[in-house]
Image 1 (tube, rainbow, N blue to C red):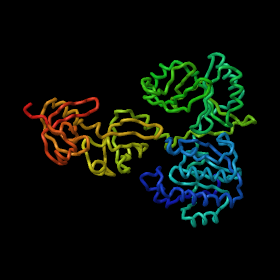
Image 2 (image 1 turned 90 degrees about the vertical axis):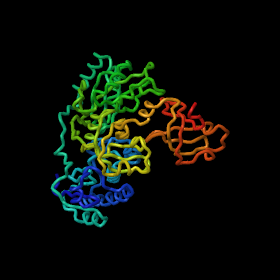
Image 3 (image 1 turned 30 degrees about the horizontal axis):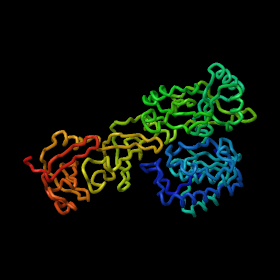
Image 4 (image 1 turned 120 degrees about the vertical axis):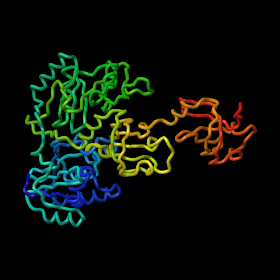
Length: 506
């Protein structure tokens, strides 16, 4: 670690250190671009003053430092336009121009998905943290760059070391993918007839290769990304029923890897119970000839590949040191994997989206902002304002409806914990009953009647009177108290048909 390390933030570090949501960005959405531009301009002064023209990528990730949500992955995860030859140039140990490094810095500040450490041979470095904090290290004092950063409205303080110092990395055992590894792989292919090779070319980004012969191995070996992490798994299967059953059991967090006829692979996705269904128009699993699939564990504790190794550099030296430190996104995903539909969770209403719903901090440090409660799931009864049911700051208990891995969101319901007034009403009333109600809405085709709290029925215009009616307003008005007859109860569609013209005595 160089002797001069600076922390750069868009707000007073003392305030951030005492904030409740220290791992959640405090940059307002409408200020993100402006603040990101200021940070990039400020940090650029440090390498320029130090004479740094190129930087080296260390431990690059495609996603998973801040989040795994597709929302952060739009726009190529911040890599679009930075690598003219494509993301194949984005790998551990890649040496890039300073301008590319600053482009990566901007993507990280905006939390667009990609993350890496940036450094140079003389000890200069740039690290981006998960608290809107940037760490810059140099072998010399950079007071001119510090003053420039403060002029741009940023806070700068000298600290002892970066919390992302490589010396603090957890790495575990990393075997080099040397000749002995490839010999063992060849023996596995010959013995088993085929294996699945996982190429994790950067953090949380995968390429898949099915190997069934020695020529396959040689072809794939030439295409692998420098310093990629490799894992060898049992071959994919064409027994889709067994895969469906395993997905439905959901015993652990796994990636669904699918190969289609011709040898290509679909993008791997986290296996969700619904993916095992075959009774939907477009099932996730296709059992037709040529389709194969496998489920690959995600959590390190569940991963037991047949072989694992890391690609050394061209001179045979293993220089990659892939960190295994858990990120905030890892903790969130682990928390999500502990939930199941039907679970009861507690939380606090965090923010609202007007007529759409509210975000909920679930009662777990990793569950902040994960819950989402939509308006239709708030109450069986009609209400005028979301604030009447779930004002910001209110503690709630809700049922988990669905876990959306792509959006990193847990759908919640308050209604599910309340008795269904519709079911209760229809269980205690029969066709032909005469019941009281209140007119709530008039539409060209009829009138809606509130029969009970959370229960409405419809009087079709033909049932409003014994004579022809042109508009409902000619017979009744909103707010009127009426007696109506129950004509029909459609439990499947949850509809109650009513009549106003039927004589009570009939």
